[in-house]
Amino acid sequence: MNREWSLKELYDGYQDERFQQDLEKLKLAVDEYNACAEALDAARPAESIHNQLELSDTVRMIAHKLLSYCSLSEAVNTSDKEAAAYQSRIYMILSEQTKAATTFERFVAAVQDLDSVIASDEFLTGYAYRLNRIRKNAAHNLSEEVEEAVSKLNLSGGQAWAKLHGYLTSSVKVDYEGGTMPLSAIRNLAYAKDAGIRKRAYEAELACYDKIKDSVAFSLNSIKQQVLTMAQLRGYESPLAMTLEQAAMKRETLDAMFTAIQEYLPKFWQYLRRKGELLGHKNGLPWYELFAPMGGNSRTFTTEEAKDYLLGIFQGFAPDLADMVARAFDQAWIDFYPHEGKAGGAFCAEVYCLRQSRILTNFDGTLSDVVTLAHELGHAYHNEQLFDNRIGNTDYSMPVAETASTFNEAVVMDAAIAAATGEERIALIESQLQDVTQIICDIYSRYLFETAVFEKKSEGFLFPDELEKLMLDAQKTAYGSGLDPDYLHPYMWVCKGHYYSAELSFYNFPYAFGGLFARGLYAKYLEEGEAFLPRYRALLKATPVCTVEDAARVADIDLSRPDFFRKSLQSYADRIDEFLALTEG
Image 1: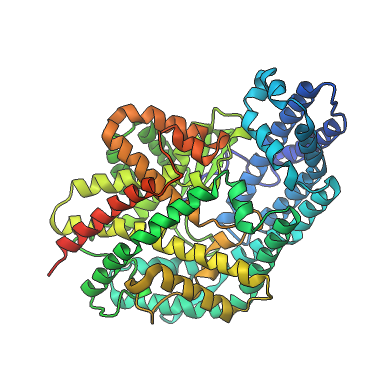
Image 2 (image 1 turned 90 degrees about the vertical axis):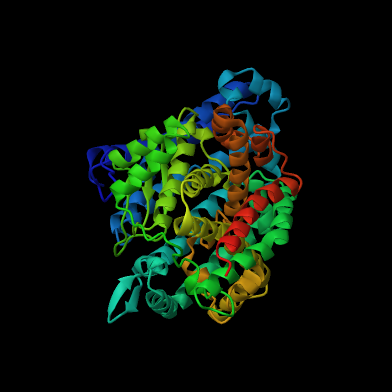
């Protein structure tokens, strides 16, 4: 089986004639888009909007293919200078259409009877949601000239600072056991069987951040200042308000979720304290023990075994999902193993032109790594539902982005737990609780931290020691008595890339939402069986073309009150009670 993903279906390199031709096609498509925007005719609104959207789709298709190749190449080799150079070049070309895009949005917003115009053209009907959002968001648009300037300045602003963060965290050398290791590899040792290795790896990880924390602090400060400035210029109350608008999610939904989470935090603290006791700690669980394997599950997986394990589960759930998983393994969609210069963590990237996805992991053979594969394959399954959509209808919002991925986790873990007994059952339940605690306690801490950063940043520059304190305060609130206060992680703001985007703030609460939303959907699947699957696929397909709340209504879910989230959290609380009972005495 392949160790690395294949990108040759896109291009054979930057000098590939197809790559260079597409680069020229992109320039021409942007020029045509800009010319079309200058010819928008208020007397022919349907025709004008139709033509502009078709050209937008053309630009997007070409740019997506080019950027997919560059970004995926860079993800496995962050020192790939050509990838960085071509991405900058492509974004510069795309920035040339910003003024025209703003002109188009103003044109759409000014159409008197937009609903009738949309209804008059089948192509426009497919973009009704997008056009209505343009009309709704018109009040937050800046002038054409300012939007164009902002887009170009972002290349050397937020995007450049984000690239610096990615480069530093992927290239920093961690001193460990007389040698050096990549940061991604040292973080994988958190799952080691030996407690001594886990602790030493944690200490080495914390020490390595001293090498880069000052530079990363400048990245974070600069990005968050840019976000604050843009929120103010666009007339939003706060970066969170801007994020929720971008996410097509109501504040009431966010508040309902966090109300339920706050109520259930003490239950998660019980689990953490019990795990600490079982590992011989009396003052709560030290951070370096969060991912310590427990119980009788000492099984490790090769990639072939991981494939067979996942197929065995998904074939009994949804045959189309199992078929896609097999293709992902067999057709080199996945880049498995950590190595120097490779980005840390895991992600799934849609490659629309191929009707495929590409998945990056840092696979080390643990059950947690298999669950991570299932998670990313869930994203790929979400993408599968969208490949029949027009490319302009493939972007789903942050909160629903984690739905299919976390649903996959639920399917895998519940199937595994149901088949297990004794020590193996304890191990599997504990592994599930590890992951759930991350999307509840850790994500809540990240949300609290980012909220505090925005509040404090408006008062001045945040130096590393201040950022460390904000992170520790957030962790103490979210993890409470569950963790040992002497062994937390003050540098989580350095290693997590989610904070480093000027376009996408608060990429934390969507994980909690996705986990709880998926758990609720999974409960409906358990109640309804295979009859639920068509609605599940329809929900996934609808996510780019409706609000979060409307997507939930496809499955008859009301997100405006905490009750739905309480029900999902209670299912996890029941797991915690089972874990406590199985490990008592």
